[in-house]
Amino acid sequence: MLHKEKLIWLVFCFLAVFIIYGRTLFGDFVFDDRGIVEHQALLSDLNKFDQVLMLPYLTEAAGAYRPTILASYALNYILLGPEPWGFHLINLLFYAASIFLIALVLKRLFKDRALAYLTAALFLVLPIHTEAVANIVGRAEILSLFFSLLVFWELLKENVVWWRVGFWLALALGSKETAVAAAPIVLLIIYLKEKEIFCRLVLQKYAKTFLGMFLGGAVYFGLRFLVLGQYFLKSATSLVENPLQFVSAKERIFTAFSVLTMYLEKVFWPFNLCSDYSFNQLTIIKSFLSPATLIGALVIIFFSLAIFIFLKRAPVLALASAIFIFSYLPIANLIFPTGTIAGERLMFYPSLGLCLFLVWLILSVYRLAPKKILVYFCLAFFSAVFIFYSYLSLKRSGDWLTEKRLFTSAAKCAPNSVLSQSNLGAAYYLDKDLVNAKKALLRAEQIYNGYPKGVNNLGLVYWKEGNRELARKYFLRALSFDFPYYGAYENLALMAIEDKNWAEAKKWLLELYSGNQTAVDSYIAPYQGR
Image (cartoon, rainbow, N blue to C red; front, side, top):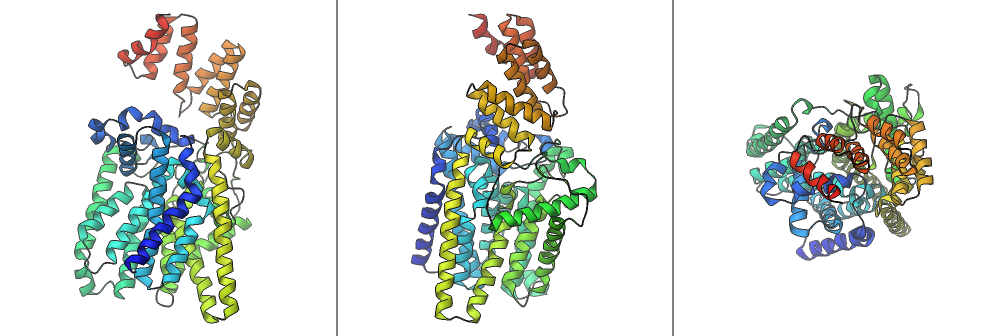
C-alpha cells in the first residue's frame, strides 16, 4: 500500500468515524460508565497507577481482569481531565485506528485492495457496533480488537519482532478476554503467509514469535490469577445479568444457540437494537427443535468446519471463519456461562469475521461475470448499504447521549427486562417525576422482585412520598441479597440524619465505608453543623 494511499485511507477512517459518532463527544457518562466515575479518586491519581494495574475489573466476582482498560481510564483522567468528552474521544480515535488496521492487515495478507477496503468500510458502519463505540466501557471491545490487529500486523512483516507480538497480545488480553482468539488466528495467519506451519523451517523461523506470545500470555494470566484468585476462570453473577447461570446445561446451550441467531440478524438487519437483554427479556429455550436454536447450532458447525474446508480452496473464508468462531466462543455461554446472557457489544470482534466472509462472497460473484451493469450494481449496492448503515449508526448513537434517553429506549426495546424498567424508574426519579418513577419501578418489581438496585430505587420513591417505614424496609431488603446494593447504606444513613439520630447514621456509614471512621466523620460533619 503506497504511503499516499495509506494517508487517504487513514483520513477517510477518521472522517467517517467522527461524522457518524462525533455527537457522542457531547454525551455523558451513562449506564456502566458510572463505574468509571465511582473510581475517579483512584484512577486520577498518578501515584496509584500501580494499584490500578492490580485491580479486578468492576468486582473480583465478575471474573474479569482488564488492566489495559483501567490504565486507559487513568490516562484519560490524567491527560484529558474528568469530563466525559475526553473518554468518548479516545473511543473514537481507537475505533478509527482499528478500521485503518483492518484494511492494512487484509491488504498485506491477501493482496486484494477491494477486499480489504470494503471489509473495513462495512465493519466501520455496522450499527450493532454503536454500543461498543458510544458507551465508554465499550472501549474493552475496541482495544481487544485493536491490539489483536497489531499482533497480526507484526506477523505479516518480513522481520517479525518477537517481543512486540507478545507485548501486543498482553495488551489485547488485558483489554478483554475475547482476545484469546488472537492465538489460534496467529497460527492460521502464519500458515497463510508461509503455506506451511508444522515443518521444521517454519517452526524455527517463528520460534521467538511463539516465545513472545507465550510470555505475553503468561504475564497476563499470571497477574489474572493473582488478582482474581478463585474467579480466575469463572464469574459469579445474579439472575438479572445472566439467567443462564441458573438453568440446566441443556437449556443454557439451547438458549445460547438461539442468542447467536438473534445476533446474526442484528448484525446485518440492524433494527430494534437494544442495550439490555437481561432477565426476563430473552426466553429460556427448552427444546433443541426451536428454529432459532437449530439455526444457531448450524452456524457454529458451519464456521467451525469452514476453517478446514476453505483452508486451501478459499483462505479468505478460512480466516473469516476463524475470526468469527474463536472470538465468539468465549462470550457464547456455550462452553461455560459468562457474566451476561447477551449484549450487542459482544459481537464487535466476531463481526469482523462475518464482514470478511460476506464481502468475499459478493466480490466473488462480481468477479465471475464482471459486466459493466454488474459493476454499477455492486457500486450502488455497497454505497446504499454504507449510507443506510451510517444513518442507522448515527441515529442509534443518540440514544447513548444521556441516561434518560438510553433507559427510555431500553424500556421500549426490552419491556420485559427488570433492569430496563428499574433504570427507567430511576431516570424519572431524578427528574422528580414520582408518578412515572413509581409506575416503572413497580413494573420492575412485578417482573422480578430480587433486583437490589430496583428495590432500593422503589424505597427512594416511598421515602419521597413520606412513607418512611416502607422506604426503610426496602433499603434493608436491598442489602439482603447475595449481590447487595451498597448505596442503600447511604440512604439509611440519610434517613437517620433527618431524625438527627447520629449514632444510627454513623452505624450505616461505617458499613458503607468499610469501617473508615475518618470518612464517616467527614461525611456527617456538615449535617451536624447545621
